[in-house]
Image 1: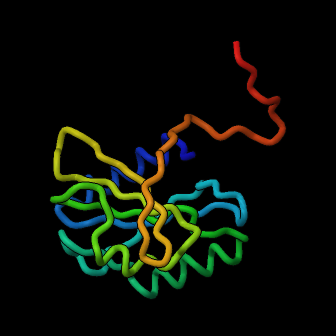
Image 2 (image 1 turned 135 degrees about the vertical axis):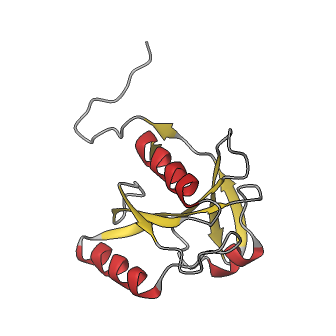
Image 3 (image 1 turned 120 degrees about the vertical axis):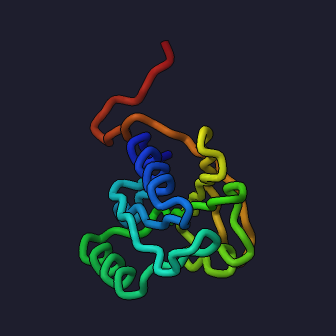
Length: 146
């Protein structure tokens, strides 16, 4: 489950950085699997076919997450000329087994293609993207069918 404003921000970042790949992370509270805080990161490769987090920036972002008891819930990047599916390189570089890997394709300027995957030990599993306007809080009453 991911909020619409976060999806919109990922797509906007990907469109803004096109023709280069965009990349970033969405942090969330440890153990929650709930993406909350989007951090746009620099693609140090500045490439239309490859991305890499700047190592100094990544260290700073991961330390800030640790200090806030957060984890990388979503790791995202864009593909500029191909579908939103992890490349062999993406699979080889996937180092966060608990993260959702979100890809957005900017190959079609009139259509947004956003997909999510789990990548564990080289195995890619697509998962549904459930977009919501806001997350339910623990204090809300459960929804009841009408």
